[in-house]
Length: 145
Image (cartoon, rainbow, N blue to C red; front, side):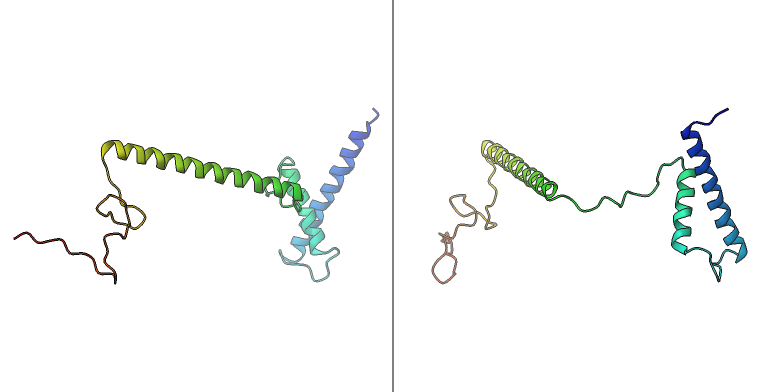
């Protein structure tokens, strides 16, 4: 019967891959697994042939990550940056809502938390300095006699 063009290509390709395999096996046997002293092709070409053979054996599914992605387009970079900024802003808004809700619940329960200064003063505001005397000395409470 007559072969179609796809069948002819497959036959030629299979023949080439078989020759690659035979060549690589012959080189390994010739030098006991070492690089031959006078190779008939470069090590790079041999490695590329081996890659094609390995791909064929794996059903043309690459096990290696795709490293040939190339540089990103500037529009992609801008879009990714905008998405990242939107995610960060959304996270900040969620954090603010959680803090406001916690403060509301604390107020309902009568819980007093220290403010940014780390301590509460007499009127319940954290970190206020109104009760300090000039010179950094703290006012002493009156002693009961």
